[in-house]
Length: 469
Image (cartoon, rainbow, N blue to C red; front, top):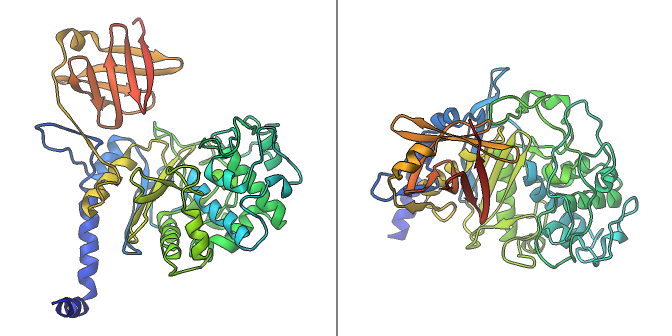
């Protein structure tokens, strides 16, 4: 029987496999779904073009990996709507914090070359700036795993034409840097605390040890060997890539001034790439882990990169889903959002990149891909019981609420209510008890109180107080 199946597969025309890929693509495009389902009601399904319009997202690009190959890739919407340039599979996006994943490969290439040691005090390699070590010795492994205890979560970047700081000025927090200096918050190795500042320290280590610009080393030693030949860490990219670059957009669909921000924090946020190139990065990681490829790192070094460090949540440049079946990273720059997942086994994965700082569509696409391909553990949904709001809540709830400088507004719409956040489209409200509701766009619970609406999200509470009309 097995021989028969093998022969049958050999006889099938290649077009049959292409047709299957097209069918999967079509199903994904028409199967976007929110984080929540309601008991007794049919699951909501959205079309990708409809969601781009409803969520006011300018463009998105997707690639799906199956059995160590890109099964399909496609762009939707606009790379720049003012210039009427559509997103294609070659359109480049800012990878934001996904830059850290690729940076880790470059750092481990230095380790593999014997130029640095993962567990050595980083001050051995640094010359122009040194971190405060009063809390303990910091190593490269600490930097790549976000366990160095260093400050500065992320970076806003710099508008075109603004003065840009050196890496040393960024770490020192000195003008023209627009972030605080990088300092120790706790002892290295104590816990995981995400730090773009720590990743920027690794950038300085690389340039100090190699004596060459960060983007040049990464292009020659990492990007090009993995086939990521369209990608670049150069900030800003050279003029030859101008027509490939997407422009970033805010939630109100206004373009970022100068089209995009520039990130001298290259290792932490400076990679320009697309889903096709990131797919090559994922596939090479998977093959190298299994000893089937070594374009940049050996099997042993890739396995070290993917080995959880300190806890099961993260390794060197990657994070894991709770059941540890997928390694992943996401990112958000000014006007850009993105994510990737690669399976630990089996050679599967996906990449989604948008030129919008509204990332709501990304999770919906991930759920669609997960359901179509049977990877339902990627982004599980939650089932809730629908309810009818109390009469008092339904009549008193509409109004404007504020928390510091953040505002939300609840208004009647048809026979229900909608909630609007600043610079975001209106979202339909679904009550799950007489005084609690959810929206499909954000996995959060809203509690209606007498003079406030409390947003509960990821274990935190945000109290918005009613404003007088």
